[in-house]
Image (cartoon, rainbow, N blue to C red):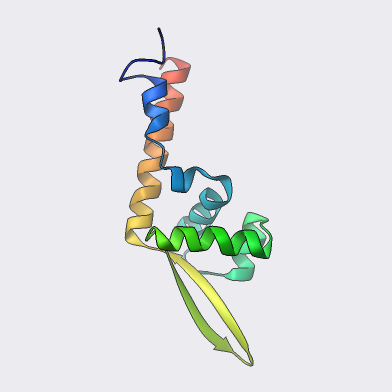
Length: 109
């Protein structure tokens, strides 16, 4: 049966990193990979996430070592910014490569 072998779309789909695969986390890594360091508000605007959602997902990415946060004072306010780490960039590239392979397999290319 198609899709039940060790090579093929099902196997390739299982290679997708579950930490990155969630849509908000993918959006965060993609934004940071494209734009470099971003503030919490910039990231919130790009991902269209709520404060709580962005905070939760960025913490998960930080725990995985994919994102690094920086906190500092701006006037009387604390400002948080984020950047993708080298391992986060590598994981994102691996994820995109696996997604590319999966699309090719499903499309028969």
